[in-house]
Amino acid sequence: MEISARLRDRFPRLSCEESFDFSRHTTIGCGGIASVAVSPSDTEETTALLGWLEREHIPFCFLGVGANVLPADGFYEGVVNRFWRLNALRAEGMSVIAGVTAGQLLRVAEKRGIGGFSPFSGIPMSLGGGTAMNAGVRELHFSDVVHSVLCAEKGKLFTFSKSDCAFSEKKSIFQQGIAVLGAFFTGKRSD
Image (cartoon, rainbow, N blue to C red; front, side):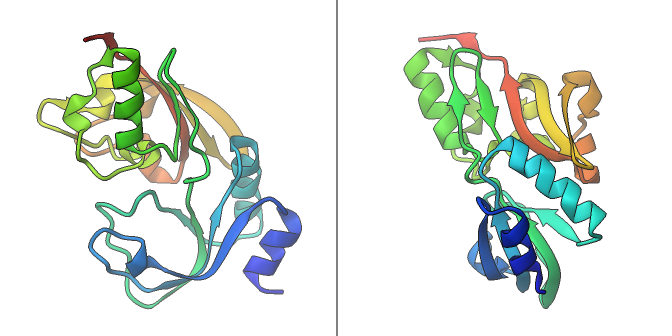
C-alpha cells in the first residue's frame, strides 16, 4: 500500500496532497517532487502522525511557507509536513499555533494594542518556521519575543521554555527534527 493510502487509512482527518511539487510551494521556486504532503488538523493529530511516521520508518520533513528553503531536485520518497491548518491565534497572551503567518500575527497584535513585533513586517514566514530557525532582522529575532514553545517529538507533546530552545543566530534545537507546533510570545502594550 502506498504511503498516502496508509496515511488516509490511519488518519482520516489528515489533508493529503500526492505528488507534492516543492517548486510550487517555495518562494524561489526550486525543488523536486515528494511522495505526499500532509496537513494535520490539530496538535494532537500532528503529534500522533509524527510518532507513527517514526515507528514506520517513513522519512519526513517540515515545510512552512517555503521561504529560506532549498529543497533538492529529484524525488523525495517521504512525507512533507505542512502546518497551515494549525492557524489559531489568541491575542490575550499572544499564543500562536505554527501555521499562523507573520502578517496574521502583526494584524492581530495591532488590533489588540500589542507591540514589539514590527521588525517582522514583510518577512515571508509561518510562526512555526520562524521559531524553528530563530528568524529575524538585526533589531529583533524570535528568541527576543518567544516565552515558550509547544513542540512534538517521537509521538510526544512537550512545552519548552525559552532556555530549552537553544536559540542562537538563525538556529535552535528544533532544527534537529523536533516539530514546532505553537509558541507563546511576549509583547508589550503599545499604541
